[in-house]
Length: 358
Image 1 (cartoon, one colour):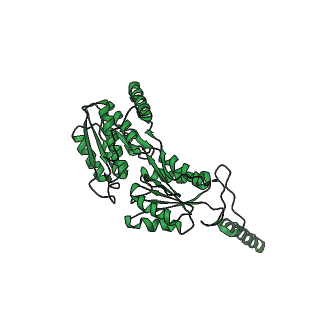
Image 2 (image 1 turned 120 degrees about the vertical axis):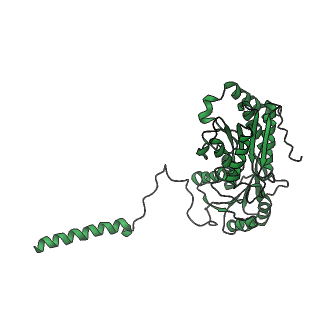
Image 3 (image 1 turned 30 degrees about the vertical axis):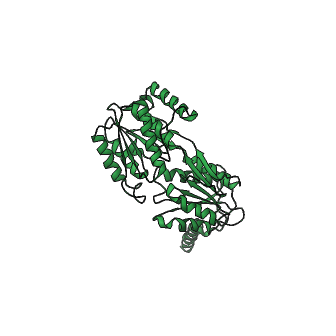
């Protein structure tokens, strides 16, 4: 009996030993990541240490995962983490008065490159670039009137992308009425999208009926109000619009999702290929008026890391997103016309009608 009990006790101790080892009793180093899964090699350590490259992101008032503008910029930074070995972090601004303080959190903690997202952050970014000359700054949607050595403004010809979207809308519309649900007109890129869309629609149909509505609120709410976006889209649908362009962050997303519930109506997204970010809009989402923010941000970060980042304005590409599930529904003559228009916009033979100073 003693031997039997001893055998049982020995088995219990062996099992406990195995459990303890599995729960952290083993002090050996963790298994290394496979080469396929591991990010690009970068020296371990804290931001500010030699050989450590850090990128910080500060958003305007809005969330990093807005499925549109902010998210597109953040994905460019995430690409830098994966391919360049950057250590990355972000701050979502809650109040515009905190712009400078949020930027300073990164600059004062050894970050090499700081990406600020949105037109409204332009002044704070320029001031920070002058205060921290050893830090590179990338301002998304921030036109640089007077170049600063360590600041690159990533800008886009939104009017051209909007023009293509308007032309597509006019060619798809059966009612002759199309609509736009927009963020605030305090932001020049939003105005450029709107004016470009108007011009593109009129280029196809000079008699097109345009219903365009800017959000009436300020910067703090104009891009984060999907309920207003949905109700405004519904009003346009009720007035006969059968294609609606949503351009305004989460506000625009609300419009897209509202249109998705309307049989026979199309919607067009903005900034990124929203087929990939707003699946709720799939029933209507024929395309998106894109500005290629993700590769633009990534390219500038790469240049910052190797010391070759340009200052002044860096113009990123624009265009329409793929038609995805609607590709078979879009007549070839529509695709050919869009290609013709795109070529004209690029060579200057077609003008959008947008006047930034007007």
